[in-house]
View 1 (cartoon, rainbow, N blue to C red):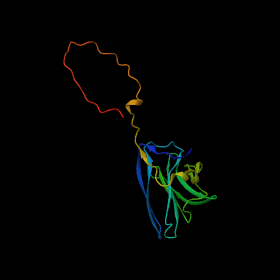
View 2: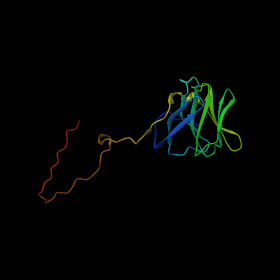
View 3: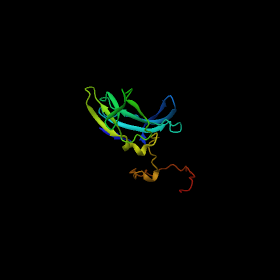
View 4: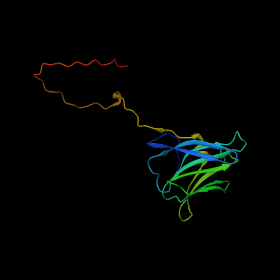
Length: 169
């Protein structure tokens, strides 16, 4: 299974990605969904780069994987560029000299060494940096379904209560 998260994810936490080379340092954040992905899933959480101003560009991709993925490779034109074993399902892979990761793919590998998912980083091109967490939408009273509350029986109570509401805008 391969997924590129291009929409904000409900129920997630921010993870800080800190990267460095001998020429540059970079930091960014990505959102981690609270729900675990399916066992063979490889989902790109965010892509970015650093070191361009220093003349030492590095592209990075943050990935979350399912429990059936034992390692994740970054490959360019069939050549292995970077590899990492997931830690709590998270992997951050880098490629020096290619800030936008053109022609690069993320490959999920299971325990037997078989490829379980391949995701071209270009599919994540709309993700520039982190994916924001969102909260549940607020339901306004005008979108609630009509109620079926039965009318109250007549009362002998003669007290009244009044309430002033702001005008409906």
